[in-house]
Length: 502
Image (cartoon, rainbow, N blue to C red; front, top):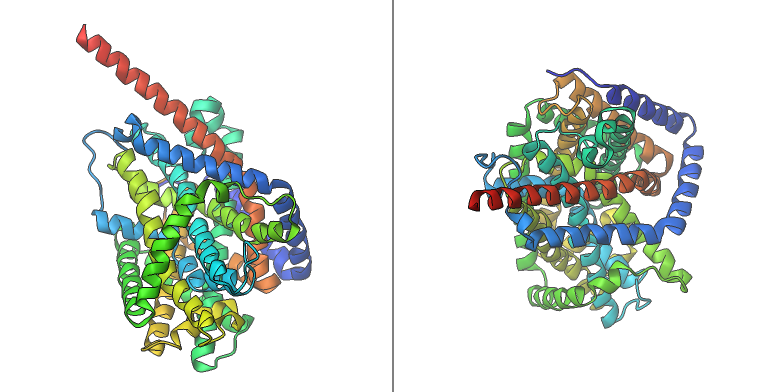
């Protein structure tokens, strides 16, 4: 059992300081994070768009290149989990609460409140709303996760390195990966992970509160959200202490079952033909406009630029902040897969599932608004999904399933987070000790509560955009490192073949 590393003590100290500042000066924290967030989105928006698109290009290249045949591990290594369980685990960790939180809320916002193209409430506005939702939750999001996970899985299982972000940079920084530079890189990764996971826990608490408020009239306030976070903390700590093969595996499969049940019922009772047509049309326009959307920064239109900052840049930052956590987790459960299989199941399959999900839930929300049946757009973001359910058959049942699903996603995300943070702060130990996981569980809860206390959803979003910037640079270096080592391996294999033919 490995002991806590220097990274553990430095990271914990920084995060405890953040907790104290948030408790003592919540208004100051909100003000500072808001100013930093505005500066970053204005000054580095172009950078986020370019670097994330670069990750997409690299993933697609690896999908079709000869490097796709390389196994993430030794040739004799076999996958630890079945393909359905593997997919359930990576999907639960990768999207989870966000998919339920924004499933109906994002499309209806783009359609009826603030359009990415200025077409509010029109037929074209509906198409644009769904196209940009696909863009935010599709290939770009999973490419961010995929790059980090692929780098970690390749260097850990094929090259025998420890499971740390810093270890993936050895091809370009050499021995410095084990020194001060490596420690700084790992600290940045840990802090980005904590902020990313804590933000998602905050979203989960707010939406559970929104659901019970909408259904049962329970107040929607910070006190109730605190109680929700504390109850879920106890549950995910119990799950975390049971280990990767039990708690997370069981919960991930439960998540997929509940998500499928919710999806199927909504598909049956919602406007089925409308959502099928909307899905088909949006797939076409998404693929047709993918390059244009990838670089859309609106330099001459302040209104459109503000929308891009608030949505696209926010999402890219969210995925980047989550990527060390999701990347390490996906890498850990992907041993024995080939690069081609990995990219297919991490990039393409989850994207397609997400597209179908948003077509069903977002399409149903926009249908109600478009036909004048209900004003879904007037509801609070966390209540939108429940407002949609209320207008369809079995609405209350759907809402209860959704609340349970958010809860299980909540537990899975936090459970996975404690495992990954324990791994990152014990020199890459695949089985971090329970005391380390408990410490991280408590800190995750504390950060989530502090961010909610200091400014609710906006404080959560601001902090995440700030945390993502330094880690995005590390991700770019990881990508270069991976390509460099894959090219080196390809040359070595080629020279061995040449020697063998002589």
